[in-house]
Image (cartoon, rainbow, N blue to C red; front, side, top):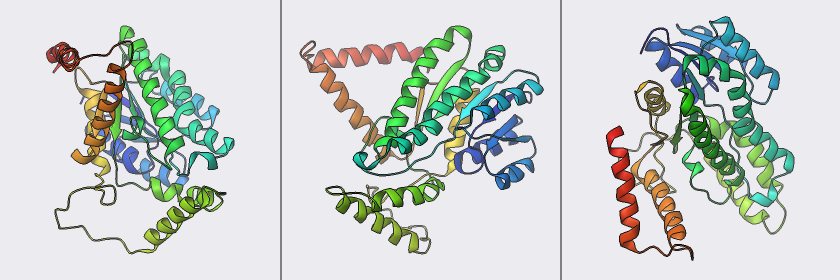
Length: 312
């Protein structure tokens, strides 16, 4: 990585964002690391090559301040990593408008606002944008509604920006992690528990059962690494380390031809996403306007694979 590469990473106080800031700085980048908490900013400031930046994605003035900080460092930005995000649980009918807006303000609206603020610097550098989405941008399940809604929307934003900015030399990718060993669940637990325990009939029984399970899990001592090679399942997850995701983010920032999407996680997790996408494809192919045969569908897939081959 060129020593002059300048990258801004949001949500760098912990987890994937911290791992990304540390990795990029270790490889010679100049990193502006956004975080909300003073303690996290102090820690980031002790990492060589990292400049801490107070950045709350829900505060419009912070986006303007980030643009000013980039301008003070030369006015160009080689990479923007949108990692900041929150996640809470609850059956859809139990969410208030205010709760949904708050989640979307961090996971979506703040992302667009910061991108707009930094667009001149990205265009000047012909830089890269990397969104940290989720496998929840392609799938969903009960209790995960608003979180996965925000990640589905982020997928659309990323794809639209990729097409709009490509003629101007700015590449856009989205990284889609599965389970990652971070503190996002712990940070979101108070809001989630309050919502689950306030649920009204007929949603109260399922909600309170999940709240009880969450409290029981939190009371358990940290589990030792499982030496058994048990197959992964919904009740036996195998989260990856944040640095695994950070390595993929670095790839999207530095390879000559970055992919539009990067799926990160275990084979079990990836198969869940692929099966959901295949189901969606079959629904579309079997619609009244198409009624594609198997051979016609396979021919379309082969044509897409052939078009992608030169970029590999």
